Length: 191
Image 1: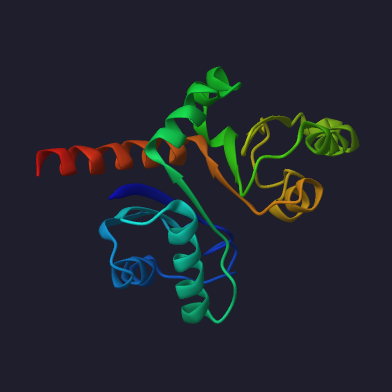
Image 2: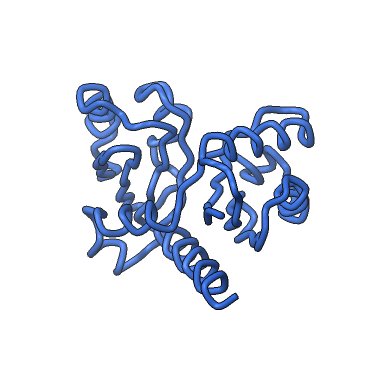
């Protein structure tokens, strides 16, 4: 069994993509996954599954599309992936001061450095925002001092520039999901 963290894109955001977390849990359980826990309404789940990440991701996406009658972006990470993301955060001091102003944007694949430079346009077009970014592999780190509500680093823009599917979580959520996935490992070890 592998412990995965599922991160759904654009569910329960501004009245769009309604998906009750009870329904999300049911989908995961019906796929045969175990120890399913969801966290807040934005489409986060920690669970154990026997398959590889690509197969598990595809199975979840297919089941959610059947349920919602629309495609749902699904990204998977492991506890170790989140640990690496936490360790590599270039805005760790800012995250410690206010975790709501630092975000990890999970990317469906690593963005080549030359493509990631396209994000510079967002910063130069909107200098008053003071938003900063840093890309490491399949993660885009954002520091949004004025908050995320008005940032120009929106998922559709990021996806278009980088050629990926993305979904963002604030730092507090990243830390919580990392802790939840660790408890899942602890429960298995004690069984």
